[in-house]
Length: 432
Image (tube, rainbow, N blue to C red; front, top):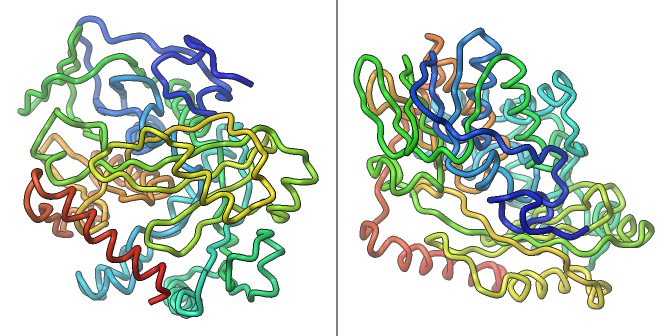
C-alpha cells in the first residue's frame, strides 16, 4: 500500500492516512449558522465532547482547520494507556489526597469510553486488548510495583507483574528485565477511531466542517466563532485545538508547548515473524523518560515510535531517529523496509497534567494531555459535555488544578525543557 498524493488530502504522509477506512472530505463552512454548541477542533477531545452532547440532543457544529484527526489524534501510536502523564501518588503530593482520589475515580474511564463507543456505534478500528510496560532495570521494576499498588488502591484490577523469564510471552527481545501487563490497556487504529466517532456525531445530527480554520471568537452572552468564510453563533463554545491551536487564543496556547513525536511502520511482515516478535499482540511501552512504544498493526506491520522534539519541530530524518531504536529491540529486522515515517505534535503543560478551564461563562477549553492523550482526551471531552449540560462537578475538579507558565516564557521554554529531558535521559542510561 502506498500513500498517493490526493488520496487523503491535507493529512500527513502516514500509514494511518493511507489505510483509513473513511476518506470522505467534509465541506467547508460557508456563511452564518447557529448551534447550541460550537466545538473548535475535530480531534479526540472535540469529537468526544461533540458526541457526548449530540447523544443528549444538543445541536452541535464542529469546526476543523484541516481534516478530522489531522493532529495528534490521527498520528499517535494508537495505544490505550490508562491514567495520566503523572501518577496518582505525584498528583496527591502536589494537589492533595482528595484531588488524587477524585482523579483516580476517573482514571480508567477514558478506556471505557473508547470501548463503549466502538461497541455502540460499530466502529471498525482494529481494537486489540492488552498492554505491556517494559522495564530495563531493577529500579524501574520496583517503580512499577509501587505504581501497581497505588493503582489497585484506586480500583485497577487488571495489572500483573512480569518476570524477566516471562517477558518473551509479550515481546521477543533480550532488552528488558521484566515489566507489567495491563489487561485494561490495548491498541487501535486512532484515525479510524476518531473518524468513526465523527460519523456517530453526524448520525445524531451534528455537523462537521473541515478546512474551516477559526480566525476569531467574539465572546459574550451569545458567542460567535468566525472562520474565513463563515461564522457560528452558539450558546457555548468548546476550544479543543490542543497543540495545533496557535496562533489563535494565545491566552490558552501560551501555557502549553507543542512537542513532536516520531512514528514509523515497516513493510508488512511475514505473519509468523510478527507473531514471534509480539506473541500476545499487546502494545508495548518502555519505562524510560524518553520512551519507545510499538505494536503490531492489523496488516502485520510493526509500528514503532519514539523520540521527542520540544517546540514541535521534528527531525528531518525521521527514520534515522527511530530505526536504530527498533533494531536495538529487534535486530532481526535489520533488512526490513520502512514504508512510512511521520511526526506529529502533542501539547505539553509544565505540570504534565491536562488543563481545563473557562475563558468566559460560555467558553470552555481543554488541552495539554502531555503524551497520554488517547484515553484522557475521551474522558475530558465527555467532561466538557457534562459541564455544558449543567453538571460541572468533575470539570471543576480539573479546572481547580493550577496551570503554570513554563520558566523563561516562550523564549527559553524549549532550551530549559531540553536540558531537563537530557538530565532524565542520562539517568535512564546510567540506570539511576
